[in-house]
Length: 66
Image 1 (cartoon, rainbow, N blue to C red):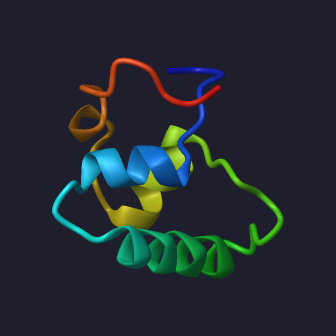
Image 2: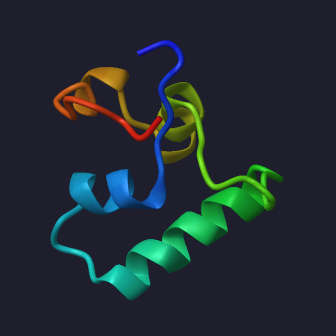
């Protein structure tokens, strides 16, 4: 997964039951909490650490946004 990034679109694919508005609110809150306000992408490690999930839970995404 090295060199790959996760975007808000990937976040919506991981949590398909949430609305687009909720996904964007969560995504922006995460960027604020991580002091990454000017970024549109995060690494899988940053994403997993913030959401407290194991990287294996997101490995089913065949291709993250690059």
